[in-house]
Image (cartoon, rainbow, N blue to C red; front, side, top):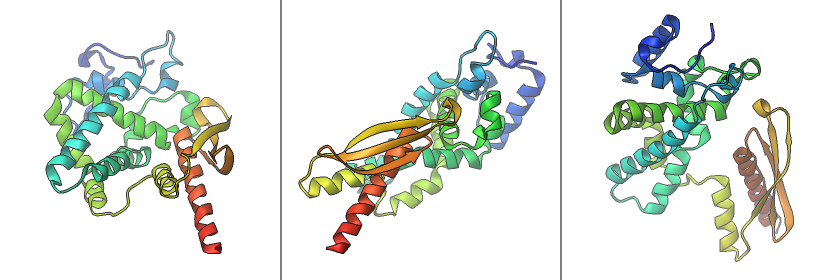
Length: 249
């Protein structure tokens, strides 16, 4: 039986409806319209395999990304009144990062209810960080559409409560790209430039290779399952190189 997008909860196949209801209850997702939750869990690889193709979860992901950012900023602003805007921005970037969102999605077993294409499923898509993070943002977007601000605010702040507490007490929550940029600025040097060197493998399991250069000269490379991860690794490798040079001097 093919699974597609449905207009009403009662139109969902009974087994899919029951599974989503159990998942929503277990994860404290107060959905009234389970078709919105269903839509948030349709990965592009699954959508493109349907005949005819059906909408995927990317529109909800786009909305959820903005909702998530506002919730994090609002929560930090209200909870930490002495925290300056620079620190709030760094914490927000860390909380909304692929790694943090993927860990949160794993805690609620989001991958178990995702709809993935055959190839993506066979290559471990339900545990891939980028897919989990995007799906969680789509769920956040769907919950916002279904139940509004208060419901989604409660869900997100409870889901990320431990991360918020840890990061609010940590001195350095900057990502490697930010650290590298700030280090170079302090040295009076130009901003780093990132370049895609290549992309290996099929779309559902690609490895990106990125170089980071300074004034046209390559200083390090990095690889990752997304361009962002590869850039972070390249920046991290560049920082390690500069650290070794300082020790050597």
